[in-house]
Amino acid sequence: METTSDFQSLISEQLGLKIDSLPQPFIHGAVRNIAYSILVLAISQGISPSMWADLPRHKHKIWHTTFLALVNSMMITPIAIPVMFDVLKWVLTNPSRQVFEMSTTSDIYYVTGFLLGYMLIDTLCMVIWWTDIMSYMKKPMFIQMWIHHLLSLILWPYALCCHRTVICVVFYVFTEASNPCLNMQALIDMHPVLSKNYLAQVGSKLAFFFTFFVVRILPTPIFLVAFAMPYQY
Image 1: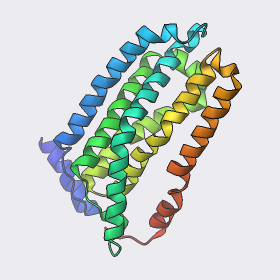
Image 2: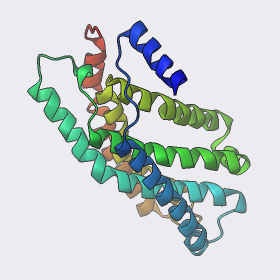
Image 3: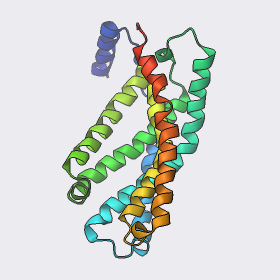
Image 4: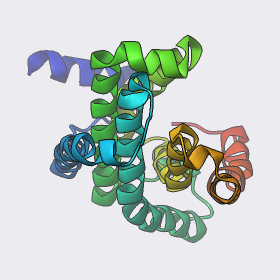
């Protein structure tokens, strides 16, 4: 405990940041998603063999992780959207304040912990099934996913506890709203039958393009402007 306290004091003195401990909503969100993710993987193990037809054996593990990603993105979207609207409301009602000054709320802690709980399980899957997953993703993408998950698991809680760049973390969580279409398209591409279905391919790609554009592309200029603004802690 003293080491943690000393670390927090050091950061506070050097950067002028007040670092809080992770509160119960974050822990509850993470633990809840870990339990859900384990359950979803177990369900996938039971029902997927009746769905994937003659899917090659080396793609079975990536199917399970993609199925988990699909279900997770569908679970987190309904709770991430209201939090993002709360952030936008804060920005509009506090025009004179720096956008990075928003304090972390209980809902933000919860939804971020919920998503990071999934990322932890997905990372463990990449450890346990690394051979099959890397053979499908190829090494560059596999490494990219490792970097993405590890940085998120480390930096997001740190940002929330410092009450800095909270809006950015919420936006990153919010981008999960485009992933149901992305993961559905990935499952269709893997499926031996649906991958040859023209309507399924076109429909999934159009849906992904639309959600990706609305969720990820349209808000980007706002954050670029925010990053360009002069800021002092």
